[in-house]
Length: 405
Ligand SMILES: *Cc1c(COP(=O)(O)O)cnc(C)c1O
Image 1 (spheres, rainbow, N blue to C red):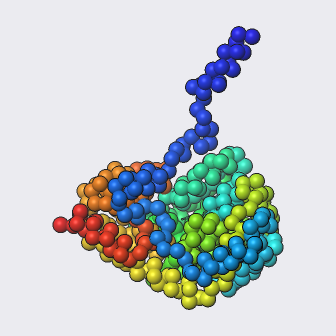
Image 2: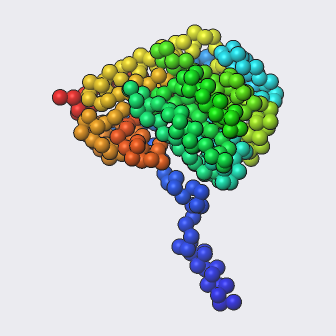
Image 3: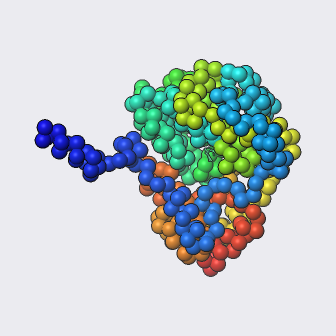
């Protein structure tokens, strides 16, 4: 009796056991929160978090307003997403990549790519399964793998000839009998690497040989530069039936607050993802789904102009960072530039980013937070260039003044 009482009271006092469960214990607050708070406190230019500082096309915004006013999507939309959007997603994949999808069975609308990733992993990973992810990795991957009870196995992209490259032998060696799934991202955040056809072919052969599923995060599919080409993994031989492809309107149409994303895959994979998704959010973003359907039907000229605009911005920031003395890894995709701060006399990117706002009024993100192997990521720092040209020019001026001699 006494023992029971004391056991009950000690657990109620919460000192016996941490509140946050073991799966999530390693994910405290994200570095984005810390750096954005620093930006606010110091009035610095925030090139940390990757969101555009101008909204997407007026026509698409108006489509959302119309949907709201007309009462379309103000109540729970259908679980898999509204038919108009699923049809538009399928048409987009067909028009751009020649992928044929059944909008009813092979497309699932999600609350951003973030939910698409979480739902896919929660549905496909058993506790104890190994999930291989390219490192540095987008921060939600590690948390989603952990929530699914999976074991994260990073394969590190390493700098070679001015770019971060995947070592295919390392990838091959990382596969074990417990590997269930490869989690890819191309174009790759934060390094700006775009996987080539040769690399994707090797990955596809490995997936087929070892019977692996692949979840591929292609949210930057429309942001490739120079001669880089985005090739969806699902188009390669043997991959259509084992690949879950993830897209998002946030990055492509500059509406990151709308959180409209999607999964496209073979019917059984979509059904699996939907099984998890229905108990995460069930549905979301009703009126915005109508607007995104319209956005996806924009002519090629929209996508071309978007890419051209981001190319100019990349060049502006890359030139400024180079002048200031950073080593710049010129991105072939995404809207991020990864730099090496060692030429500036620093070898710890986290410490560098903590003092940067005070020092010159600019906020950046230390890539080390995207690594299990913190050492491998230590000297690298990421800057976002999805900002207005005058903002980038201001940031570049500040960096030059602080670092260039
Ligand atoms: C921004 C981003 C996401 C999240 O997309 P949402 O649609 O906002 O959820 C997923 N993956 C990568 C690589 C990203 O950069």
